[in-house]
Length: 375
Image (cartoon, rainbow, N blue to C red; front, side):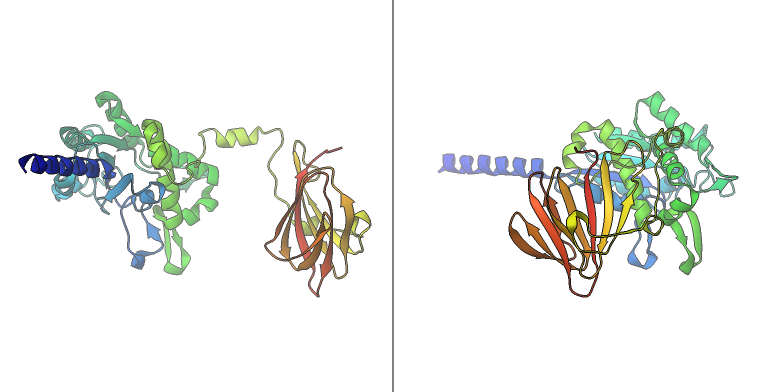
């Protein structure tokens, strides 16, 4: 009986160990309003910490966001918010530390910290706590503001971002340079195109280049995870969203030097009325997008089959995709007939025969894509 009891206890201990191992790792965030959580009553405002979990499998990583609006590295501690982190921080956790926005408010002695002296000293309190608990501290430079002057994006956190980088170098702390990454991101978007990512909300009377909309929070969280993956390659297995985001520092210069520039076209400028191709009935209207663009390996075309029009039967020399935007048609493919409409995608492989005929009262609108220069 005692042996059975000992065996049962051993089994329970083994199960408890497995359960403990199955618990997700945790990432905690100490930061300010740019990372904080906001309820639906504040929509569309959101912090990047609020969007971080959407990039991570919750079975593997759990986000605990302790960021609070209006806090500096100093006031976050003096008001007891770091105590809340200390109460739950444990071995194996990651602590993301982002301050600087409110540390620069010299008019408020309760929040201001000198970037060369007090600021890194306060940040070391977070680093020391994490290391004492067996957690991994990660310093994060303050995220950029959307603030332009005479056409140039201003670096509003220069001294504070520099202090974070220097502290990370001196104390050998992992660093996510979100300040630099977010400035590159904003520059690549441009001032006007970046506004929807911030709290530029005319209906609410807001033109706020510091705080994010839901779109901005998601974009900045992507930058955080992108750079975190570089620090911890094992994170890859837990990332559930694409993190191919942001832009390199030289994105604008590279774009200006492109031999084949990117373009925008409108179909009204390239519309060409034609009879139906391959012996089909007419009339049709064709829009050949970027037909003259050098170096393009594919063709994108829109063709509108007006009432009674069609594309005649022909055998394909290349793979081709049709996508039905609107209207209805009868599609013949290798001797079989299909009625098609909006949402249908049709892949015809080389060697197949096909034809399509518009039916009904509405024009049949098709997008076509196929490789260029197939002989």
